[in-house]
Length: 373
Image 1 (cartoon, rainbow, N blue to C red):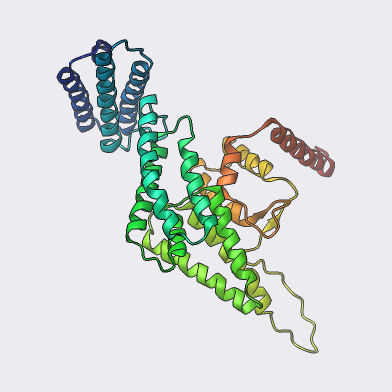
Image 2 (image 1 turned 45 degrees about the horizontal axis):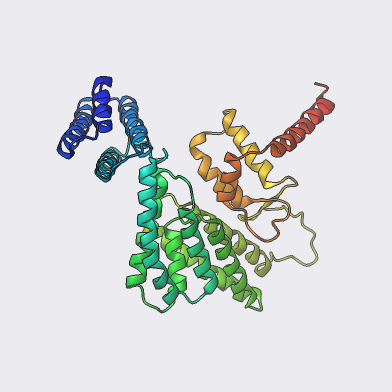
């Protein structure tokens, strides 16, 4: 699309256009996009093209949202304009998803309308959840997350899409799931949806701990863990091609716990009368204990990636691996969260940077002492 056409669309929108004229202009814009996609083979060019249109539409919508209308008719036309532009963005997102910037912020109008629609859906969802969920704590965890989303000032296209899918899945589940073992089925559903809420991750791990505490011996506790393992395996088999960080975290945690239980249950036999040198074999679920905080761990990971020592494409897998294999001070028998590491990766504070630098300088001085560098 050339700049002249965009200028025409902007002028038309700001002049309170006739609805048919506006729709004709938007249809023309989408037609040009389609023709460009059909005639261009360079994905990078198409991505820049679609995202440029996306940015222009977003900025134009925000400009219109900020206009003060003095009459009811003018306000009605403004709403029509915003609705039509929102539909245009929705079409771009739907039909050109490979080139559309899913992580860009929504226009103000779309944020407000999305909050309204999601809020109305939550009003219908909460009574159904309350009626069927037996564990009051689980209800609080789910409801708190849903409400917290609506309190955000802005969110991206991807966040809204994910939230809609979550709420629609919960509504469908409430309508069709049997009451028997409802809580367990709901938990498995949230895992399958890759529900990365910190409170839900904590709740799941606490449930494992409570179930283990009810058993008196290691064999019974192992059976409990194997039960969780089978549930997670069933989820992974149903969605084998999807990346699911929540599933990866729980699977790694269960595998680690089972490895520790198996070491207790199945000690290696010792031959009487003979002394044999023992070779230490690291169990699959062994955790490395470190003396620095998870904040420093996240920043070190970021430094490795920013400096080119790690491939950025495996960042999410790296978070899941660190969460399953690293034990930071104060974590106890719990498990780090890949989501927590990711958040700290993106939100490094000055104190963390200073502590990390001091640790790295200590390493440099150690190298100097050992090798006279």
